[in-house]
Length: 198
Image (cartoon, rainbow, N blue to C red; front, side, top):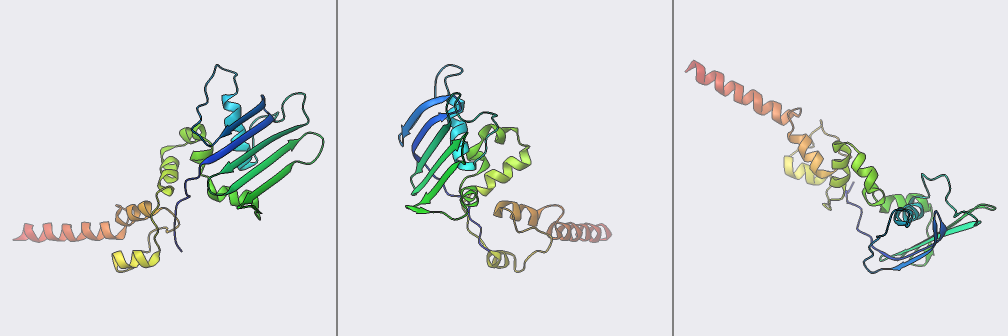
């Protein structure tokens, strides 16, 4: 079992048509700043990107009022192309391609690429500190496996869950609840007791 973080992906193209309050919006891969007065569509652009990546929206109405189809097209720097069309009078359309080839199980594929922090920073800020820490730690790129743990400690400590980030694993190994800490406490207590009798 090897553990790696989700890699950084940059959007190189965004095209939105008739989604939420947006009639038409297009941006290339250059640095984009969303600015404007309230109601100008800044949040709609972010919600459309989130819709493309997750196929979910918290909004009741997705297709722009008066239209029958809305579309979001995203391309990334790693060869990913996502095209979703939300329709009011027929089935929605979805195409997720990697390097020009359709991806099997596209929703699972996308979930494996993008983190909650990338998709919803506002939702991330509302999480408790423990959940935030777990997400941030998962972004740290440090490949490891059980052989590495055995190499470092001479054994595989049994009181630790190994399905978490390596920093959390190391924290749990040396934590107050772990055997190593308890053993150190016992040894230090014995030393103090022996000194008291001298």
